[in-house]
Length: 310
Image (tube, rainbow, N blue to C red):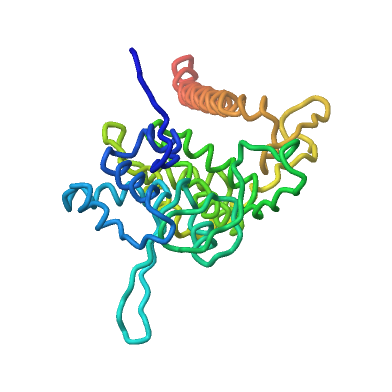
């Protein structure tokens, strides 16, 4: 593969390889984004106008815009003015932004993200994350924006959720949103297993594709459910030893499992003792009956014998 590249000396824009080689952005989405980023800072051109100038049809534009919003490169707000008219403010960024970071850029507050082209027209302070200030300038670097993520535990929970299924490949720009939602679950008393179980129940079947995994996770975690009451503790087992009431020559102590009064050996031998006792009782009754019959027969034959002898 041969390539012949001449760096332009004017009329060019610096576009990161992350945008040009983005695995989830279509060619229309990349074209709209790079076109917007190449516009002058004071240009006020909406995304729909850019799509028209680029020859992108309405259906393809809607899909491209949805992809850019999903990945965090485009944010927009619709607000009603004083006269009742509605206006839409669009923000295009060269890096994925969370909702909180996009609001900071819109309102002109400091953020670590690079400035966006078009609206809003306020530049924000920041520096490239790969550059270091040592040896380049004596001016100290601007302070980094405060962390927007709730905590390490919530981030680790989100990472464990995305590893539940290979289809859950979440855009980097949506991770802070999911971390904030996961933190709400944890703050209410849910465990990490509770959150993962909620996600598992909401996933489609293995044979179905997930086109927007970030949006699906955001939908599943949007409203934390009630915390299940703790399970009632199991009744304590009896550990006090007691004396067996079975037929032992000497006193026999055992540890009961419940309210039983005999040891395991006596309980196991009880059916055999009952059967033996029943058989003994029947045998004794039969013997008594036989002996009683013989006695009656002897008493009735004696008078006849005496009369014959006389």
